[in-house]
Length: 187
Image (cartoon, rainbow, N blue to C red):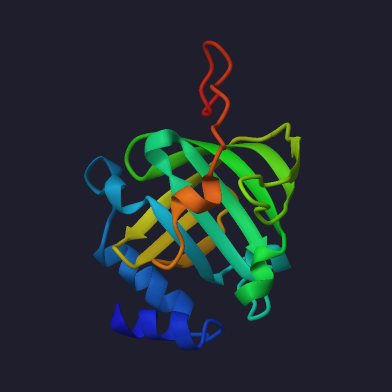
């Protein structure tokens, strides 16, 4: 695990990352009934098997995932690094529902632009999303500093915890919509 953490921090495009991730998945199986408390936090994408630029690590972009599974909240957040990140960001907010084992169902609810805080206000330009496909994350490695997951399209993601950022500050004032009566995210 030490080599993987080192590469994710210093060389997130190193070719060896995928094989290290796959080895670790076999060594550290996840059971969210036991490990769910480790999910809560702000995580930064450091490596991905995806080809889409918004699903990959880039030095000029912070690609964050904010998870608050106890309150069924999550958010993907793209912003510039450093002080410029506070100017504005692109966000997709989602409702999270545990599905047993290591799976979490994800229902994307709103997406758009989030502006910086102005006093106590945070202007947002977010539109409701209609998700036409089931989405989920299988959490395959989960430690206090590393999370590896596989999405419903088979993409592998490796994320590092960002202890300098808080769930409360990034998800302030947002609460997911309850699922439609009689339906779950798995439907």
